Length: 313
Image 1: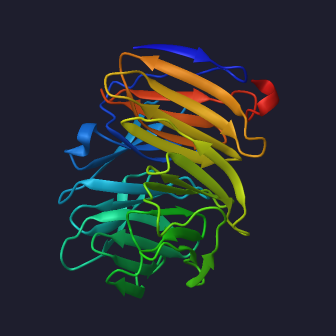
Image 2: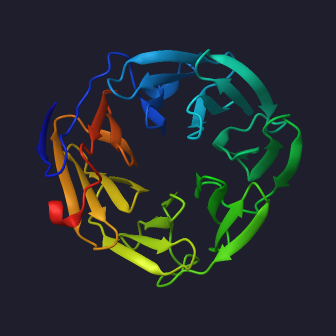
């Protein structure tokens, strides 16, 4: 695969991974949590971010890993959600499973797992949510039956952002178990089909395929910060972090395109295209962004000497 890169800030860093990387679950400044191609093996791999080398495989016996999270505060505590309905807490340095929690009795798949300082939360199929004490594994609270739309959730720090079935955005602080509704400008989420949601602790971004637009709001005030019109594509995903929005789009049998936008200025700050192989997802943080291809090749780019800004492009 050849990459045509226009990169004016920092050096693009590409690494190839010999093991299959079919999915990227989570990104940490030092590590990556990935799954094998299509994740049929029921495994979560911990890769070193600097070179993509495998450090440890967290092997599961009874289910396929659907989602995972790594605690950014210590970089060694990993949480996985499995298709057998269990949530497992791991020590990434030893590979030991420290805690197994049963999210539901019917073996529903886990759609999202997250940790705060003292809580573990799991969102399951069919609108089930469980909240546990992280130290003891004791169940604190359980939600059943359609209180939020679990296909549209994103978590950061102590908070989970949700778009409910009634079209409202709520921020749920899992440490205090308190919720607040966020009233946003310039978009009726009840009338608009929502395709994806991203929350980074500062901004909330929503992709509306019907409107062909990504809207970004301030998560405290609900003020509209940025609106990006997107063209027709067979696939679009995005990531937000450190005041940037990265979009990945592709059309069938065509090149993938990654664009990075500065949210304050509304200007494009980075751009790259790929030929041949197609990118399947993107994760961004202050260090750079990570993606993998449909042929299960891991790709990484660093921002180099700092986060890009509009005047660097």
